[in-house]
Image 1 (tube, rainbow, N blue to C red):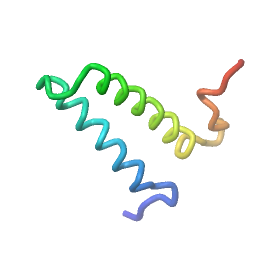
Image 2: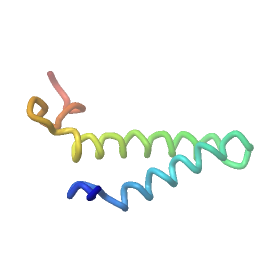
Image 3: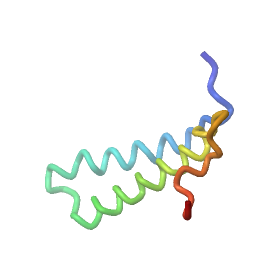
Length: 68
């Protein structure tokens, strides 16, 4: 299987870092502020992924666009 031209190892690494922080949060090793920042970063990564990969025939890639 070949990788999509839209595949990004950098985004994969960022996602892994966010997941690691959230996984460690149960061990009282990570502060609440850091957990909230990780969640915020994860939401931003999701938005980026959607814009890169989420454009299909009927989608314009602006799922999170303001207005409506």
